[in-house]
Length: 509
Image (cartoon, rainbow, N blue to C red; front, side, top):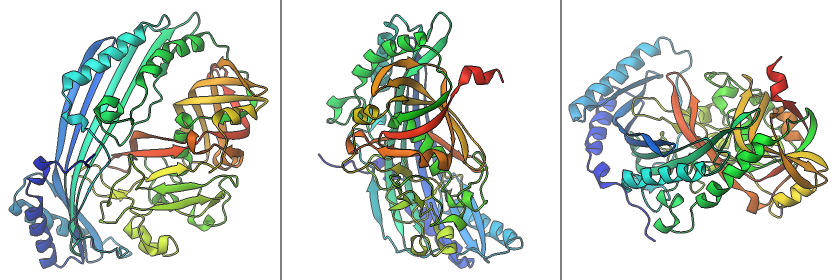
């Protein structure tokens, strides 16, 4: 099957002439570095509740940005008028910002050198662009999902949603790099809600958001890459009914078997954010704080047990943070963050790569990203993933190793401190494990630990057949705030001796 092509409605836009005008003016004004970024990002969302379409929204963000280093300082400006004259004006504004900033810049900005990528293209891996599917067809699918969910006796209300993004970018800089890229991603989902005799609760799909196309929802549209939505829709009402009748968990210490649909979020919060180098350096503290995993601990911090191997990866197929080249013209890569339980790497952009030559050979690992033409690129999270054991056990085998424990499925709420160290996570479903067998759901559970304590308690990771690429559309960072999508792959994993709270009891404290 042929790979998707760049959208011709994007390639018809005048980004090359605007970029040439901007870079020529930056060079005339004495910029030592300059890059031009042109973006068109289209967002489409649909929401349904109880068989009724609540809303459909289609928006587009279109514009360009110029970033310069002048007199050792950053300058940045952006615009939306697509003429060479405006590109020149925006460039002059970016240089003027740098001239003001130079008087306040104590250390000159230096960027790691990178190979030139002359006029390259990259398109993400998908079969059918969801934005080319009629809105009516998508609405009908979501409406059908909610009708089928409400057929369950325990379901009082049901909702469904579909978020879709097509992101096109053109990047050019003074070294001669030129990249044109396109990526598609989508996040479908549903939730069933119901009330029991003494509880109200919900049960949602555990299908992850993906860098795929419409084939993820409709196998007939392009092959076997879809999720089994029919099976999950049939299962969820029964799971909700069981949960509403389940006993409240007894607080204490348990062994945990954690499914990827829950563990991805723990990875995101306690590893992904903690190993963003700007947080570890204290340069960034918005939304999620800084990090306990500071650079002086590199190579010595025992992050977890010897079975813990975590990679940063912006190349994995269908990853939400996967792209060919980042927003500084760097070819994306895969690298180790934790190896055999030891902290060995961070997520870097070009400035950080130059500052820390001992990391990645003094280069960026391709982690610069801006979510809009109106925002400056910042260091953003790669697809940070826990690797499976090549010949590791199945989920059933991991459960079979536990005498007294809980099996955790699906993410829900979470809390973590401002250094990514003390945390607690809930889940959609907690199953009691007794003598290696699942014996029904319990409610009101949360697991609590410190980052190193939790990952240090990991005794085993599952094999490749247990590995799932989960993730989120809504990772926030910086001020002004930016939002990025990111995936986290992981296998099912076994943790020993983890503290379990009863959330209902804790709420009264």
